[in-house]
Image 1 (cartoon, one colour):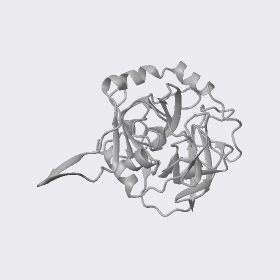
Image 2 (cartoon, helix red, strand yellow):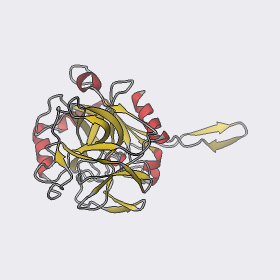
Image 3 (cartoon, one colour):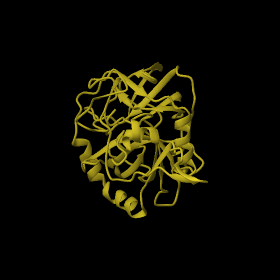
Length: 304
């Protein structure tokens, strides 16, 4: 699904999905090795990493002022919020927030992202199309900042600049595996992300099924990105991914699918992220099945 693009739907793997995002060129080249007697290409690294310099990260934090954040929500309206997406009611979610960035056209926009437990206490899960355009290695995003716990203009835990963004090489080259793991800087007090907000559990190779809560900050009215919305449904396999009934729309991209979610504790297990819609008036949300490729992406991020 899109971030907050006004061009919503394109054909992709037999289902509908939003246009992927774009931005500054930060793609990595595939490595090669030389073997005895001949030079040949090594197997492509299944993971691609975008890195942002300290100067770029400082600029990103300065760029996303409260006024700019307020303005970006007013800049797009994707129509009325659908009936299956309801305002989240429960213990405030510290771990889920808005991911702000600038796309390749220079437009301010956002996705949704989630802090997860990790070795470096700095990993955030979102969709790959919130980081870079699929099948387009040189179109990536810039000025990326994660604001956990965002709600109606309030940023109770501050903003965390994205240090690096890890995506599957298969997304970069073939628009396959729409998930990403980000690594964020410590906050202004030197505290790592999950030291501040905690982290959701994350699971890989989990059988599809059971009740799932999908969350996000869609650009639909009246919320327009200012409030966290939630869908609840039973996950099923479809088109090689998993799907739940849901009417979250653009801006909710990258938001978590939480299994075993408890609204009292605010805890669950992340099993996917919002990836694609079935139409411009959505009734279904698609998410990747997190398998071996997703685990490699997450491991690269958590070890950064």
